[in-house]
Amino acid sequence: MNANNSLPGRAFPGLSAALLMLLLAGCAAVTPWKKPPPDYALAPRADSAFAPIEAHIARQHGSEISGFHLLENNAEALKWRIALIDSARHSLDLQYYVWFGDEVGHLMMKRVIAAADRGVKVRILFDDLNTMLHDMATVEIRDAAMQMIDAHPNIEIRLFNAWHSRTLLGRAFEAVGDFERLNRRMHNKQMIADNRVAVIGGRNIADEYFGLNADFNFHDLDVIGVGPVARQASEVFDRYWNSEWVRKVPRQSQPVAVGQHPSLADTETIRGTVLSGLLDGPRSWEAELAALTDALHPGSSTVHTDSPSRASSTRNHMPDAFRDLLRSAQREVIITNAYIIPDANFMADLRELSERGVSVNILTNSLASHDVPAVNSHYEEWRQPILDSGAQLHELRADAAVRSEMVDVPPLQAEFVGLHTKAMLVDRERLFIGSMNLDPRSEILNSEMGVVIHSPPLAEALAGSMERDLGGANSWRVTRDEHGVLHWQSDAGEETEQPARNLWQRVEDIFFKFFPSDMY
Image (cartoon, rainbow, N blue to C red; front, side, top):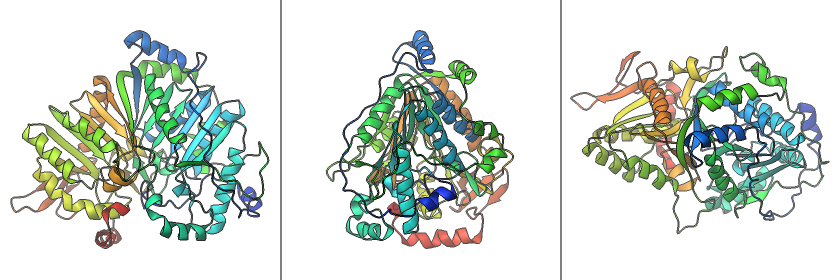
């Protein structure tokens, strides 16, 4: 299942085997939930390592303008996260739907703990769906592991929409009795350093989002923003951090000593790649930060998010923000979105844009590139209506050329590449990058976030990447012949049946048609 919309199968945070055995005892009792006291982002300070970058942007473009840089290459996306963690001097705020206990998860948590050791205030907000694993022992181990990290005097972990029960059996009963609440998940992804720089986008924290999974890796997108956009992101973080839907990490019956944090496992796959230098421990990133100053594109921004809660009388904000941007197009729209199951409003927008002469190109996953065939089962019936609207439709190839250029970290080469990006470009002036898929779960059930940026130079940079992905070396163009039969065309040739990696994918594609589209 897709890590965005379903239950992951790996634990966070990862601990060494010896430490895990020590945690097995005495993990059953849980204190009652209490809403934690309010707490807010630290104000940006003048001695932050990022202050000179922001000052440079303000001198050149004004105090309301931020600087932006796209994070498309998976290796660069991981390096910049580590660079920001290593360079933070005052605060780190991290908000993620998924943070697996794999090699990337280990590496980043080591660096977060090292930042806390040197006095950085760290706040970590996780969605609690991902504390549910396949057996009771693992559930309890994960809670104990989070407690050990949370016991650090400079780290606090909170959980969004937390399970009241901390055992697998108790959660099974809870899911039956309170499914409507538990179906509301926090899909947001962001990190903020010193309240001066933020990373916002589609990546969770796991190997496949950074090119280090041997089975498959995602083609994804984030953006670094330095300046006022970081404070906008902090407002979103604080809104969730202090919401009624957030609780502190549960305390187990056996307390954990303050300062006793996990001995996280080594990362053998990373050690054998071009990212091996990241394992040497925290270092100075002064040269990279200086180079970033010249690489940033100026622009204005608005960070959008849904309400943390979901009252029956309200609706999510993100779909309206996305469609306001979409409807503003005068000439051109390019949409790259991993999981598309449209609704009537989106289809009406496509037809209206076509009637106004606006060019629309859409890139999504093919069945072959999908990590969630269940989504494809409900998307495929929309291929014809999307083409009827006047839009051009493209689907990522599982063997896309971009895999070696942007996705896999050398020398690793995964079996296939999947699309995970959620982005839109409008008139080569404005763009959206965020966490929101174009499907019922993102629109109605989950909370989402994203940033809308007005920056012609950044938009041109994104346009180049999007046009490359639309090309035949990376995607299939879906067309129809005179009889209405769909064809998939690319540099690899032409198909009259949707491309798939194997027969089992085609069987799954049929099977999942019998389930509701908002399950995934």
